[in-house]
Structure formats: structure tokens, C-alpha cells
Length: 162
Image 1 (cartoon, one colour):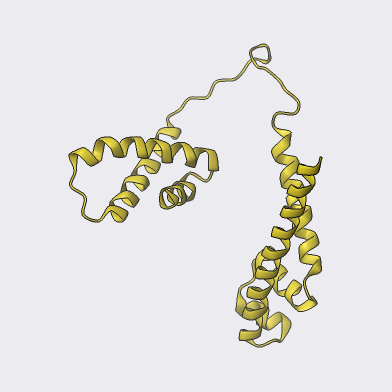
Image 2: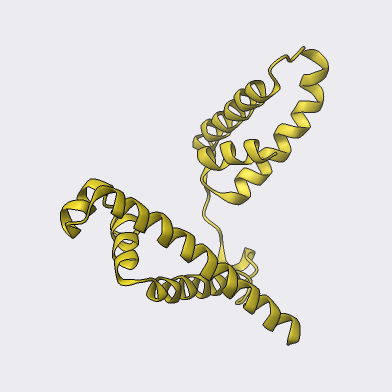
């Protein structure tokens, strides 16, 4: 299931579309497994999922879009904002966690992830050794993960108490 979802997400770029595609592929599996003798299931599944996603992408290009009349649409103010607020809260927590890193870790993580610099460029910018930069990025990423997990646990606990 994880392999199929990962492949679908890679091709379709949207989590909801990827989930729908995985469900469709598993429905298709029921039929195809009865017809085919599969010896290497993982590779066969990968190919099946990839082809399904490519077919979906091709069919999307053929869909005609028509304008929607305002009278035909139902509006709700809050329906789409929950995800936006959660994402904003998550980004704020990530910013706080980045600020909690040591100066060297913060610099290395920001250059690597936010400014998309490679290790070699970070070595040139910082004047540090390659292995030091690599270690700072790995440790910074681990510390960010720990910090975010702690904040998520605290946020979940607060929701339970509310």
C-alpha cells in the first residue's frame, strides 16, 4: 500500500488524487491477479501503479473545463480554511523549532532546505569541513523532527483537555 501511494503521489502530486488512484489500482488488482501469474509482485505492482497514474494524467489533459455560474455553487466560508490554518500553525511550529537549533545547525539547515544549497556550496559559504556540514544537517533534521513531534504531542494533549 505504501509503495503504491508513494508512486501515485510522485506522479499525481496531490495526496487526494493519489489516494483515489491507490484505491482504483487495488480494485483493478482483484481482476488482474485472476488473469495473470505474478512472480515478482512488487515490481509488477509498481508497473501497474505507474501505468495507472500515467493514464490518469493523459486523461486529465482531455477533460474540458466549463465555467461555473455563481448561482449553481454552494459556498461555505469555513470548509476550506481548516487545512490552511493547520498548515500555517505547522509552519509556525517549524519556525520555532528552527530557531531552537544551535547557530551552526540552523545555518546549515536553512541553507540546505530553505535556500536549496548543496553540501559543496554550504562548505564554501561556511568555511566548514564537508563532514561537519553533513553532520550539522543530519543532526539539525533529527532535532527538528524531535521538536515537531513534541509540539504535536503537546498540541494533541491540549485539544483533548479542551
